[in-house]
Image (cartoon, rainbow, N blue to C red; front, side, top):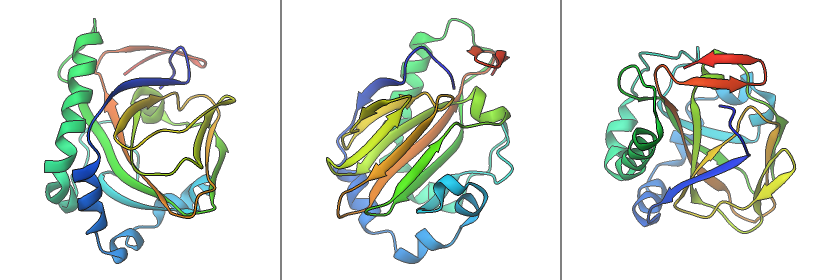
Length: 197
């Protein structure tokens, strides 16, 4: 979603529980679904574990995957922080906010996500939020020329409607929890015009 700026820090959580659970995820789980990498060239060096996700990128009634139930106890503090943050900020809201997508995304060591801008109905109307789980100082996020290292456990909203990309020059993969949060009725002043979430 477009907003004034490139990054907005929502808060932080201890990454330890998330790290412990992600370490225990079998390698095969990262290889089960390849659609995101195949459809979006910018993500070809990533692996994804969808938790709440639909390939059609729908904006309502998302599909909850079985792995979400397994991981929810350690993801819930991040979700609660996001819900509380937007509840305190949203003047206009038609119904409860909801997570339309949640996924784990792994970027290989020495790889990058090429510069791109997110398009599509839902991606323009949902808040895109990142929580790094595993990272290193050489993993950098860049949005419209503003380059930043996002530390483990920090919860950041990113402006995905501006050109953005990632590079991981470190020796280990970078893993982020990505959450797309919708505030129903929210008016978005997007570069393409006024949008309603």
